[in-house]
Figure 1 (cartoon, one colour):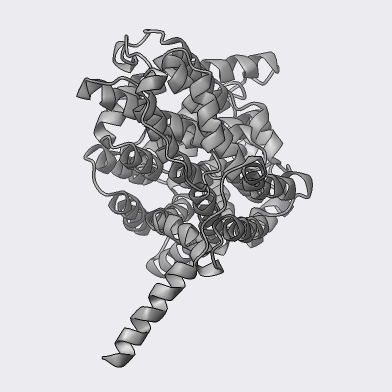
Figure 2 (tube, helix red, strand yellow):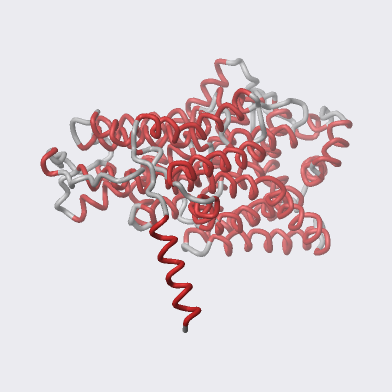
Length: 517
């Protein structure tokens, strides 16, 4: 008993001796942004890999946290660990999408799709809009932009080569289509995360924005076609057997070493595969429409690829398990998962310091009505995505900030209006995170897309700037959402924000306590 009393006294003494956090002032406000600036400089100026820059930035953020909070290192990293825990499920999804991409390339699914497209009369002008549409369909079915891009890029880049398309235009179309599902699908991790953080259901969110998303996709397809027309791309239907002979042997040999599944895909396109091998794509889509678990949908795609591939003789069980599934898991864990862990930790520590609070106050000050407030929330989400260079970290970091801006500054009396504002904040978060990423050269999305594209199509060394240059789907999606939000245009009835919702007067705002940080 005496020992326990002594321990209690020691704990109480430690609590009394604990120093209070430093008060907010100009110096501390600037200091909070130092890790962000350092992170951007490392990635943009010094071209440091995200996997190296993120841990440095996270430790720098922890040091700033320790100084401002007068805390020890263990306390400083707790917010980062907490943020990383919130996105663990995304890592499982990523492993499955990488495995699915390998299966679709090597089991004959991609080859069957290419041959179907060629049978429909693919040309240099039409390859980009078709790539956009098919990749969007695939990404909606698996709810992942990374997996959709990894599966679609080798298919359409080589198809573009065959029919005389433009590789940059094609890769931008694939990138735009790959992000479609990440921003619209029922099974998207980003949609689920952003919706949950805003307190709205995924189903209500998807129903609200689906018509707008389809219109953006349709307009983008038209733009891609006319850009191809302006570039003078071929309008002659490609002959598959003749065009396949144009692919240099060294390219296939290089792919066999760097990306064996892509090399196998090209061989299957040349030799031909049964049309039914395209069915795994529809298996994933149908299961997603029945709102089944994401991992089940992706797993069904992998298993159906094995079953149909075994019947067609394109893949066996040992190859499917050891060369495709395990290869996909390895690729995901080799860089992507580790990088996202550090980015999430960095974002969590920055959020705990209230880095974006000054920007939130600026957004409120610049708003004259509810539409403008929502519009500035979208701009803030875009800025946060630029700073954090990861859409998941942006969602986790900024969603609470955006929610507080709406709750503290809007006179919302109707529960339906509250839901609509929550849905719009969720949509702004994912759109600025997913499609906004394709306008930020240091963001993990264009970096990943460029690296995958170069690996599967070594005839060109793609850079993040190539991914950005002709990404019309991103321009149209981000631009239209901001314009419709800022102006409140009622082009789409179900997509409109509630009208006549006033801003709270300053004397009605909840009092702000004077506290550190």
